[in-house]
Amino acid sequence: MRNVNIWTPFQTIIIKEFRRFIRIWGQTVVPPAMTMALYFIIFGQLIGERIGEMDGFKYIDFIVPGLILMAVITNSYANVVSSFFQAKYMRNIEELLTSPVPNWVILAGYVGGGVARGLTVGLLVTLVAIFFTDIRIHSFTVSLAVFILTSILFSLAGFINAVFAKSFDDVSIVPTFVLTPLTYLGGVFYSIRLLPEFWQTVSLANPVLYMVNAFRYGLLGVTDINLAVALGIIIGFIVILGGLSLYLLDRGIGLRT
Image (cartoon, rainbow, N blue to C red; front, side, top):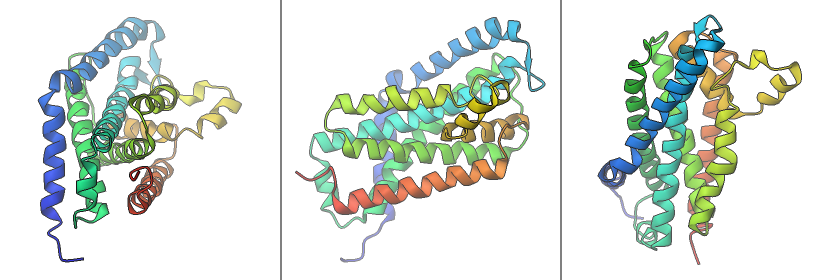
């Protein structure tokens, strides 16, 4: 294979992905912010006033990290799964796969687009949260690291979903029946210390729990999970899903007819 300037195709894919979701910002950026605003009003203020404190913080302060990360998760995932499946469905992905661009650059470009949307929506939700509570940052480094790593992880998950999807219905199955339950049961709205011991143990099998708690530590300085363990699991999942994504691209699984 001849030498290829990998920066140009990588940059091109990311710019294409960024323009894609910004062009329809009314469908991709605004709705998540409005949804999270409703969460802040209903769960944070109305219900939160009755719940009181959790782990020494007002309830709305406690759920803010989880809600921000939930927006990052769903939008990073949605951007890649919809974009790559559409490219596969329209058969223009074949032109990219037959080009001299390395597969890892293609993957990195799509993941970069997912991260761009995840971070854009996540920052917008953070700005919305400022109207309801004071955003505090215990560790900017940890917060930023978890922010980005979580977005990368679910961008990869969205890519894998898109590879195996055979119809637009397949694109929505995983977010509905897998992603939503994992996020709602991932400690966004509660501390797992409130659960019976058995269910605390079961909750440890949920990868979203580690991300939410690591991000909560970054903002509030409290966590139900050891921070090093949480970061290790997040990175471990990124390595596994990244390796699987490259394998699928290299073998052409789900891409060739």
